[in-house]
Image 1: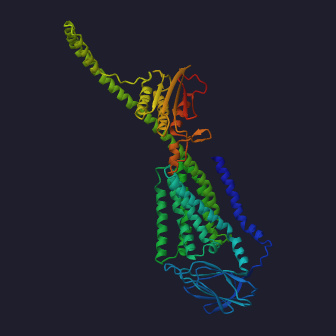
Image 2: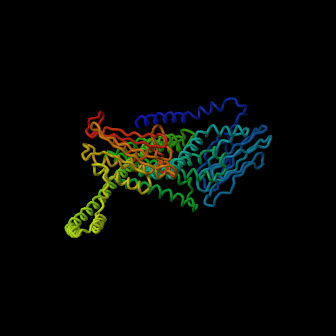
Image 3: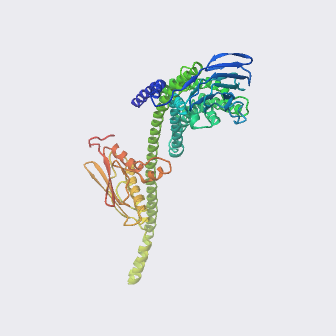
Length: 619
């Protein structure tokens, strides 16, 4: 586990450096000669704002401004054949004119709950020989500023490549993390839903989905592939706002602790804040773009709140799971703070870069932790099933012994009654014999024989427990028309091997044999069982017919019941519980269990050391 965490850490560090270097690398790569015309920037303009005029450099924010304050920017153009203009607009209604001709106008087709248009990026063809560019803005209702960007001029392909090289890392990361989230949720809800702790994988998937939708919605490149600005607006903010809830739910579902009240309070606060943001946006009272400040403050606080809870939980109870969760969530909390600082001071144009690096580390490391939990849960469930199976064998042995005991009591009562009546029968027979009536004597003797109790006790071997469990399945086999040939020699005293463990071996082997015969649609069905004691070791062999179908993977015989359940989304095919139980008991007593197939005969062999004299024995 430590090696896996170390490897994941090294991988994430490499990814982080790759993210950091992505801008320079992409610039070098895309600046090669691809026969694309150069992109020219319009980074200066004359402005008119509220009667004030002047020159300014782009990009620039004009603030503070009352709602719907007009701003006009005018720049010179030098248009070449085939040139287009790359326009990006932030929540401000915009009209763009080239030589007085309207070439772009922001759409007013957005939902009524939005008072300002969403972010739009567009490549607009320019008229040939155009010399002036005029941009007419209206300040947003929900914000007190107009954000202007540098306008780029060039061929459509060159402009697209410019956007691509600046955003492809974030776009690919968003797509990848979204795909991971979908797969995780699908696995947990449809394939692994019956495995304990599978819910933790589900919450991890929802966390990844939230981050992925946020990344895709915020990325400029998405506007070219998903031409629905309002949808991207909702994806970006809904994804960001939803991030805290599934993370907290993931920790709640995974870390076993009786003191989860702080986590539930954090989860409740995140859900309440999420609901408030949606309600305010839906009623048009506060846009997501303004309520985002709440989440920029709350998300780091929520992450550090979870970190503090993990530290306290480990300090109180030495909770190993809390210790494992501490590093990845701490890293995520630190990177969330860096993300907020980056939004404020713009260390890089990749606004979500820091959080993406933190999420990458978190997803990989927590994926490993979740995988370990799933593995441990599967192992625990298999052990539970094996214990239940073994208990069932013992219960069946006890039930059969009770039946045999009841039969013995009934037989004993009948014998006492017959013994009590015997003197009367003798007197009658003496009288008939004295009369010389031999026919009457014969008839009377036959009537007496018919009334004698039948001894129906099945005695298979000396050991009462094994005798009971074997008799239980032999009676089932007889009722099912399966021929049986059982010659078991199991002594009363089996040394260190308990009767309970012997019942597990014999019961599982006979049960598997009976199930194999029941699946046959043709041919003779039979079960043969033998045992012997030699040099303090007890060997048991069971052979049975079967339908010839074998699921063998790597030398292990897979359970056909588990294979059927795998199609229902339960547990992947594994060696049967019965076989695993037999192997475990044999190993416990320094023996072994072997299973083989010859033609249409299944052969199972079990060996246990009753005296502890075999090498490798274990008490």
